[in-house]
Length: 482
Image 1 (tube, rainbow, N blue to C red):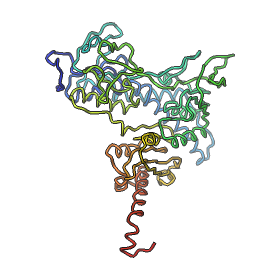
Image 2 (cartoon, rainbow, N blue to C red):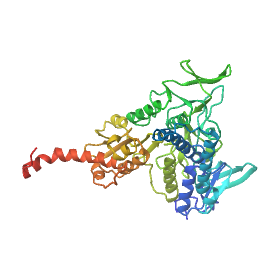
Image 3 (cartoon, rainbow, N blue to C red):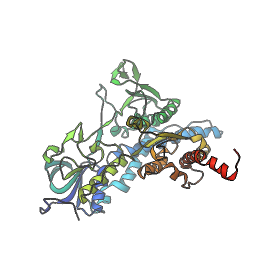
Image 4 (tube, rainbow, N blue to C red):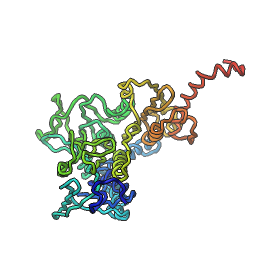
């Protein structure tokens, strides 16, 4: 049962909680709300699962996996007597992508899975008509109105497109085709652009990446990002950094991407991976008393909007646009809304990963952030060629980089290399729990694993401290020789 303080609690409403949007954030918000005992409804105009299931995480990682199989098959030929290369069947590749996302949808996101939990799924578009009322409009017309004690807006985001003569592909249309472009231009050098650059290059496309920044993956550690760029260049990806797309047009039967310096790139398709914007159109936010700023909903660190009864989570909040961040904001929003406590967004231990090969992952603060704040820190590294499992797997391109204060308390970590997305979880936990490198050094890790690299780095920190503080004393007491 809903236990939050509500000055209008005497008025009976249809639901204790109404969640708008059935993507990763909306699903998490609805499940948390129902777990806390609230009568919960979730409104979704399309399929549950949202961007992550259908146009983001799941199809992109499936495509990366298939592309890696082709790359590994090429390496395997050096150990066989057959020189023949496997041919890419584009239709089969994209069919596999779509079948995987359908399997995950049916297993996790389909309406029956929520209904078994006691969540009411309402099909249609949502629009606030009052601070405590929402009109639901289905494809066939008016779907009625529902009232609520609390609501969470989890309407997600949509890709920013480019104004060009020929239409661009976005992540929302990329996985609906059954073609692999012979020449593929990608606008944007963030995680989406870089992941798709490697995937399509390995599947046979001549890939060009265009971005106004002077380096790729600008939110990540610069040294780690440089390793990824070097690998992609060796795989044939061409980078046009410090430049932007001016137009994409047809000229004498040739499709050309024109850059702002007037240079041209011939491309059969152009992917716009230049960012996302919160999807807020048609929600009637003014009627609910919900304010927006710079295209996102105004909210505090507890996810509450300018309306006391309405919260926001996921991409609609304009915070980190990751699935795990969406789930975190939903947990914060639903818990605060229904229990009236003061749970805050945990930015300090936020982590993320880009799933190229090598992977790149980060947790905590970056070197640039610490320098801007004037924080004293020390830097420690463990190269992958000193991690035995990386050597056995021939995955030596990479390193673990950790930033700590002088006492060894972990402030930030960046990993580039095989399984970086898994290794970073230990560092994220260490940052959240304010652990020191000594704590990881004292924790037993199995051998041979990639995670042992985390411990080895911490071991070196501990060994240096012992040498500097106690070695001379032990020599004096026990007569050890230098």
